[in-house]
Picture (tube, rainbow, N blue to C red):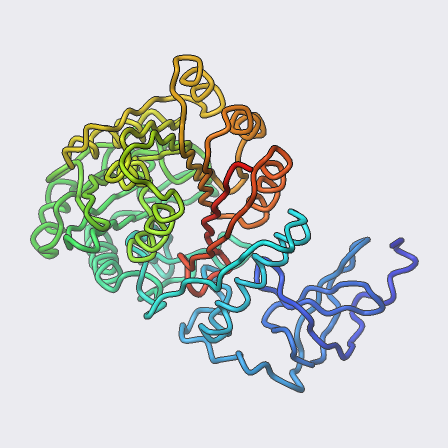
Length: 457
């Protein structure tokens, strides 16, 4: 559609009917086939919008008035929902969120994967879709001479101060406020990204959902923290559950949160948590799922789809700190895990030892390089599990799977669009997608995880 053919102009005020929801939670309306994306609008609603931006194939608008509301519309619970941007769906009832996520998965399977006939189950949601996150990680700034911590305002680097986040575990919120107040009392200055001065960049709180153990991480620009010894003493004395106080130093001008140096200031290097029967050691920089309750739901489904009977050899690509590998090892003969991040493999080996699991073997490297090497050495997988980042599987790994021909593939995905793309490639390579189970790991946000089961035809 050329610019001349766009049927509306910027700043036009028009009445529309919203037909759909985008992957990032905006309402979709169409004017003569031209799509407009509008925040805070839901499918089935009618309203007036102002056109704010026009591109060649789509535009954006701002909601001015609603004439008819969706049955799934609700009042956001959080007072800073409109500013914060951390959640995108609080204006939708939880039932509506689960329906929207299921539709999102169905749409991409059909549109991207051309898999319109596969069995997609309803989304597995939470009984209580609040206070689930076990990690609070907030940027620190200054307002009126005092420290503030919260989240960046949408499309900006302006910090919205937060007293409580409704998707964080409540104890994390309480600890965060105490640490912020203590640092303020000690006169610690917040990092200023414009002039690259100040000390404290971020505060991170990690907690064990089952164990109740707390880790406090102070991410600083400088190695020195004013009054560090007394500061740590006060944190430890005021927060009984703290098992570890850690400093990470990031001296660079960057949006990346962590620097390369991490030091334990007090206590242990790790806190511990359990998912099901498996215990995990969690360091300041370990990747560990932020919703442990739904992680168990997700991994139980992966285990069910792997359908292990004790004699199988399993390969876990993108194994991280060994979370899925150790679940699988409880029912498999042997599990091989591969991960490109060396520190993650160190954590995986430590977690295997912690649980007395000795039928796992981990390797550092790219899955698409290590797995063919294992294959050459005679390792033949009955089941291959992948849990890639949002960009999906490397194409060469998918070709390796097709060449190795494991009887089953279990694909754990955090991005339905790249899952659909990769399932299409595996189907073209001789696999059949038996079923897909979406799991709501991140209520109130647009994200949805899936587990897909494939069998060799």
